[in-house]
Length: 244
Image (tube, rainbow, N blue to C red; front, side):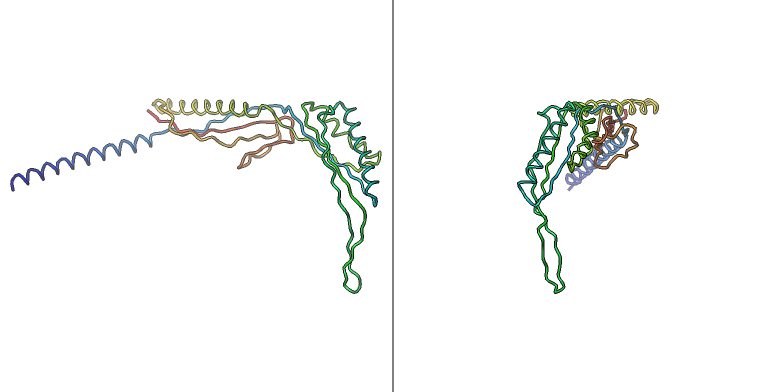
């Protein structure tokens, strides 16, 4: 009986020691994890687009399909000649397939019966350019409307601008934003009389591309401006460092 009491006492003592050890470590872990510095680093840069994409469309209407097709072919030749004269390489000019639509007008007679009348064929074609000759394409997109005076029903779209080195630019900005975040965290630690410890967590923000000096708002999913030749790229990095 006496031996059992001794054993129970020993087990109880061990239980208290183990509980105290677990509690102590849990407290230290909680304290250690709460003793962090959270900052947001930022990096941005201005850059110029080096690729332009532009498109226009033209159309013809006729009761005769062959006649409309021949007129559209003549329009295509005029458009190609105009672009080549503006310095655009023929290899950069792409003509898409011709779209053919049969047009009808619909009406209901006095007896409530529906009727339709064939109004002819409508043919349209799209021309597009992708080039690194931005000035030449810009000039052509502005002046191609002069072909309207030659009888072409033409509509010109706004050029879109892109940058071929975008992926390298992203990596560069991520590095700069990370360095910026670390510098901010290090400064906070020094001002608080401690030192910066290991990195606990890092979250990459949304990559934003806006027009330069356009006062354009950022988007939750990331802005990607294509209408401005001159652009600004911006990215943020949220990090947490241990404070020693």
